[in-house]
Amino acid sequence: MKIIQKMAKKSQNVTEHEGVTIAFLGDSVTQGCFEVYKKLNGDLETVFDQQHSYHRYVFDLLTMLFPETPINIVNAGISGTRAPNGLARLERDVLRHQPDLTVVCFGLNDCSGNPDSIETYTSALSEIFDQVRAAGSELIFMTPNMMSTEISPHLPPEFKELGEMMAFLQNDGLMDAHMDAVRALCKQKNVPLCDCYAIWKKLHESGVNVTELLSNRLNHPTREMNRLFAEELVRTMFTVD
Image 1: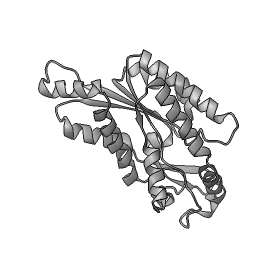
Image 2: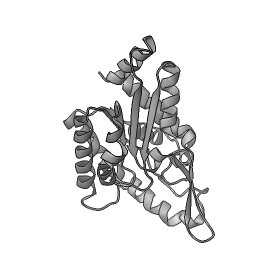
Image 3: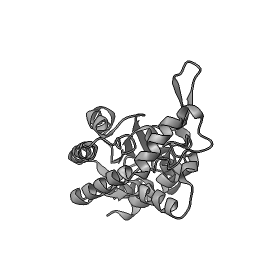
């Protein structure tokens, strides 16, 4: 990718070249959300920990590889949002920063079971892809993690109903259908794909309890599993021409 070339040039001649900016557009996982609790008044409280989010790990890996290159990170993740929300705020939260690379990751909230949800999802992503490229930014789409497949014994009772809903969406094939649709879209539009969902599926099919790899036992990966996203993203950056 061109961004790798830019980082290499900056490392070789720090006075003649500028640093790079990477924007991450997504939902709560991108924002850096982990555990979820219910307060005494019934409100939900989410643990935010950007130091252990995947974009922070991407920053750490790239600064290890190119220590002389300033890398600016734009975290445009917002909890609870879907691809259409990302499209609506694309200019405000991403494009005005003129990123060299934009990483897009939606799907967990888009998988609602609504008959039109796949079309709504892919239509919004298609427009995001077009606008990002028109703005001159390179682009990667990253598929998200799996949701819970069962009700974990560590899931607080007050979240059981939510856990049942997410397990249904995951086990009934709705999440898989959304991921198949976005893979097809990326192929059609020649968008580089970082398919982390496929890795999670392989872990699940190999007998790994992926529900216990979720910090909230619902849909937020643990801090350790956020490293998987980062490593796969950096690998993608180095392998895409």
